[in-house]
Length: 272
Ligand code: ATR
Image (cartoon, rainbow, N blue to C red):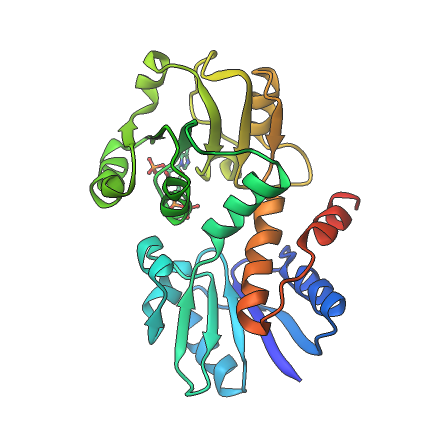
């Protein structure tokens, strides 16, 4: 049976095995998918073992996406831009091809599942770490009116500006500057602040009336950012579960050549 896996640390909470097995069942694909806890200092060895055992492909999650990027023989253009790999494909010649489906997953969730067109919109992206980098190119590809990156350390945001400014109307600022900004139509949280029970300092009035908020993280209860978005009156107030399912659907398509019904799986997960 074809073997797939997701690598991370921690990994026991991962929904990826459930999502991919649902996809496989939907599409009549006979495959095995499991979660692998790689040691923090032993990811390369775990990955090599998996492929030596005949693994066909895998997903990579926190904290190994940048390591995976360095361990591929070939990279897709979007993985190179993201400088991170979340999907690996073993090619027929045995080479490891690294891709990144996170940005495509976010776009699909925003534009299809949530019906939020991005063209011409003013978008604020909070954070300038790996998660933000991975979605910059796809977001700019939708021709927003303007994309502003706000980050705690301005240097990191400036580095992204240097790298991505040619792709669209990009600007950066610190959180302290946000009170001088016009309201945004969409605010996306790509910081990891919620994981530490924190929220970036966001001024009131940052979100336009009827605006939308999107937290790339998800949890069983609303994240701190979602709680803030609720207080600001966001019309759409989403967590990253849709992005998770959609990036998985894109990976499944790369491996199996069939596009699963991601919405059905998202609905099932939301109903749990
Ligand atoms: P990830 O891969 O999840 O993006 P990362 O590369 O470590 O992880 O980046 C984390 C992001 O969350 C960064 O933008 C970080 O801001 P700094 O670049 O200033 O470190 C941001 N972040 C983390 N905790 C935060 C907090 N409490 N308030 C604001 N931003 C925070």
